[in-house]
Amino acid sequence: MIERLELRNFTAFNGLILDLSPKVNVIIGENGTGKTHLLKAAYGLCAGAPLFKNKSDISGDELEVVLTSKLLRLFMPLEDKVGKMHRQGATDRAYLSARFAQGQKIAATFFNNSKALAIQDRVNYEQYQAEAVFIPTKEVLSLVKGMTEETHDQKTVELIFDDGYVDLANALMKTGHEDTEAKINLDPRLNTIIPQLVSLIGGRYQWENGGFCFQAGKYAEKASPKRTKAKAAQMYQDSTITEFVATSGHLYSSGMTAEGFRKIGILYRLLSNGTISPGSSGPLFWDEPESNMNPKLMKLLVQIILELSRNGQQVILGTHDYVLLKWLDLLADKGQSDHVRYHSLYRDEESNEIRIDTSDDYSALSKSAISNTFAELYDEDVKRALG
Image (cartoon, rainbow, N blue to C red; front, top):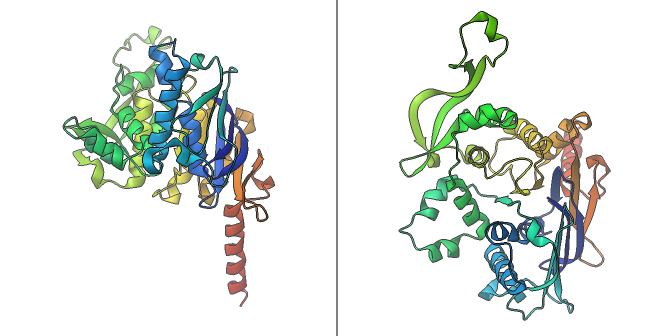
């Protein structure tokens, strides 16, 4: 997991330090304050993990190439140049740094005319091999078939989609070593989370005929087929297993289902195929999980996010949604070791620079555009009610 992210003279940021909770982090702020840039920068600095899984002795030059390529693919700057991500008007070099949970660190710099990053600091970075996951604002489930089709020109796909989308499409195509039901019954963590996701949308998404399809249904407990009928032995063995029960034999193309449902389907698939494995996978970055989702679904989604964090998954969200924020505030239970840290980005009126206000208590945030807007809306509603 990431403990600290530091950005200087990078895109909109003059200087920003973000100390992250190992559990749930929520980044809020008005449009243009850099929420998505923060998520992408942190995700980009995790790009060494898949590289070091296959090869531990990566040279500094090789690592510079990999990190440069990842940032270019995530941000897609003008002219495909790193220097175009340098903060406009800044005279000092840009600096990006991430410190991880076991003391590993990576730091890189570049100038406004740079073609590549320069590694400035690298401390046991090769030991950090927990691969991060990035879920962008728009859902990807319905796009996977077109993005991963071997007959399509990959360069054209990459011209349309940045690596937040491309990486997720590849992760969704990953196949697990076991079927989902087997994983659910063997892993108590998944036994709690995956059935909740299916209950949330009334079914599951599965790969059929070259694309993701939706099947209506639910998970239910059934008598274990391996259970002996001998009454004396029944008390010493598991009596039930959890299985998916289809409520309809009809399959629907993912494109025919609601986009909000498809976003839940993405989380279901990533958990089912092991891309997200609480306790061992890297941070989960999720940009605007509330996008195109009915507020009615938000409470259960927050419960699932908290359950992921209780099982060791670091979650870093960017959001505009007041309902999601309040449910996090209301449902976080210190008795279950829940911890939610709020990071509010705002533009300083005097310097016009992006600042950050961080608190472990949502009500203590002094700079919250979302809360201020809803308070204004409430005031106007009261005025009208009073005539």
